[in-house]
Image (cartoon, rainbow, N blue to C red):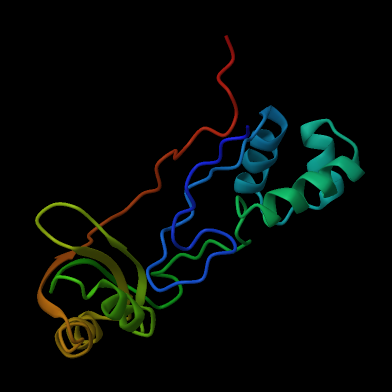
Length: 178
């Protein structure tokens, strides 16, 4: 007799109110990791160039790229922007304390708030951490004091100005060589 794990609310084919986030991760082999590494270096490269760099056929590169996108591993392609050179010279991390059970409403409003580049629910002393990039301090003040603090469910904020920033290495998408 075949055994199946219980189906969680929100799983494929289940309709309902409270949904659980998708927990299954795609299985990636060395070629998939190499494709991801190449696209992280240059997301504009052609599939032909990608195939050459990864040492697979173009057809295989197309198929794997399509699968990685369909599986949600690759969620999109974007340009990296220099905020200061694009007119957003003031950056800050804003920690936000929210009322219990208000995450959905607060996150919906944060998605609509201009200059909020990224936010995440976090564990610790605060509930939400947001990266805000604005043209100047006056705009930052407006975003924090008049937009974020006016969101129903927000109890308090704390702002840290960013003086300098750098990108880390992130995950290594290729296996280390012995």
